[in-house]
Length: 269
Image (cartoon, rainbow, N blue to C red; front, side, top):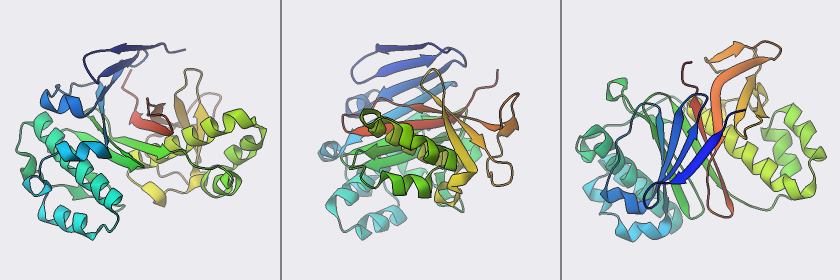
């Protein structure tokens, strides 16, 4: 079993290390924008902002592209507009610091499924998610990544959601989960599934029945895929198990009332 280590390292920074593959996950927030850390190989950085941080951000026109400003103007709900403004302004500010380039000079590309990315010569991967009052961003150099945050909501329709958006094995498992554990079971797997397909870059185009989420002894999650439906190029046959993926998904620290997960490819052994 992997051991995990947590410690506070400066204001707003939490350090987590998984010894098996030496992946380090570091957490940052608004207070850390003034002193950017370097993004090293083997590190994944998770930045979290709340809507209340918006007043401390610079004007969006100082950072966002023309297309981004047009997209910002299309949002009718103030909360959705703020999430976009904070998320995309922070994305450019942070990438600009990591890459030592002007934030406004970055030209994002979009894959056929709508995922933003930078050309390979930049040598950096990122992903963004928002829910309720929070926006989260993840960055790494060694692996494509996906992140998802969800706000807890009423589970009265959970059975219907699971049958439609989860693997059939998961749908069979859920009724056996005791009531006090159902919220944790549901939202962990929901964010794990979302983070995984966002990491793949295929999002909702990925058939939900094409992969099964397995919780490991250390609390992380692995993915089992079906040969005929999988769009995961990183799947392989494992001894004694079905086809598995090299992706690993780690539940993250999250505010009360939220769940968050991060997907990344395992470092080569």
